[in-house]
Length: 85
Image (cartoon, rainbow, N blue to C red):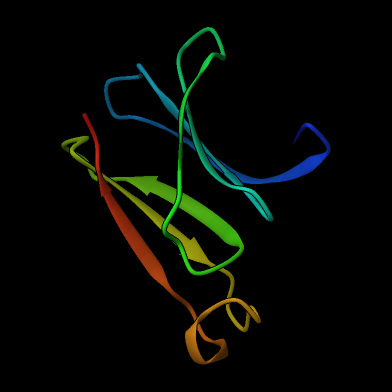
C-alpha cells in the first residue's frame, strides 16, 4: 500500500477497532479513523518506522525502527511509545 507515494511498512488496528496506526518507511506514523481520515501524524521517532503495535489496553502505541537502520541510534533498533487518546 502507498500514501502519497510513500511505502507502507506495517499497520495495526487499535484494540477497540476504532483507529488504524499506519507506519510508513520514510514518513512516520499516521493515526487513521475507520473511514480512512487521517487524525494525526506522530513524530519523535529516530528514523524509518518498520512496525507499529498497540498495547492490549489501547492506551499506548509502540513504533519500532528497522534493525541496522542508518537513522536509528548506533545503527540498531529503536522504540518509541505514545499515549493514545
